[in-house]
Image (cartoon, rainbow, N blue to C red; front, side, top):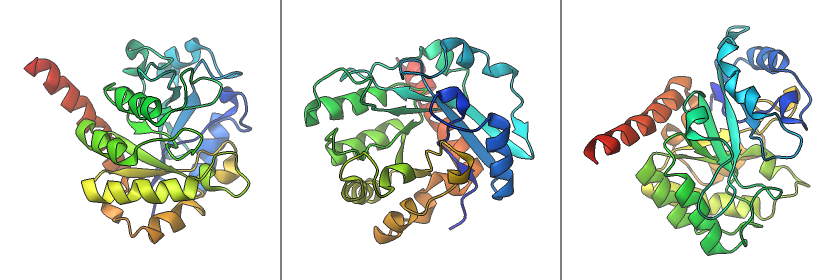
Length: 249
């Protein structure tokens, strides 16, 4: 399976990653990618960049070393209401946004009801393109409801390579990804494989995600980062869906 774009990576700006933007773009070029999404942790993550970082991304060229850059964020889902830590005014200026639950930031009780509601509510945000690592058993979720809501809202679900790494801190990730993928097949929900690379050597590494995709016999045409154009069309599809809803209202 050929992958053209890595949809989930971090640089030094996130505070606990180890390469610059230029180094990550060069690594993407060396690995034969066409595109790279750089998705820094949003402001509520301890140690990450300030709001001004995201407001100033407009000055960064979107092409480096022949690689098309999508510059965005990995938002923190704060509660069951789906609140995130960047405003829509900022998000609409970015190229891509992932929304994820992280231990330092989620402030509600970790019940199936709360976690599922958090994902469902955040998917109503027109600028949330991808749900990041919804595989962590520490945050139990109803995967059928997750897939149904993703289908309804045009949101992509992620199979996170970092989650599946042996010795990782997330719980029951392989089992949960297989369950999620079964429902994504059933409801024809697109997914992406994200490396979640915090260093250039891990960029576009799917050595743990791809075997799970293969085991589930997941259709390649529903894996959006096999094509940079397919990924961008999915992002635009959700934007257009939201605009149409506003018109209809």
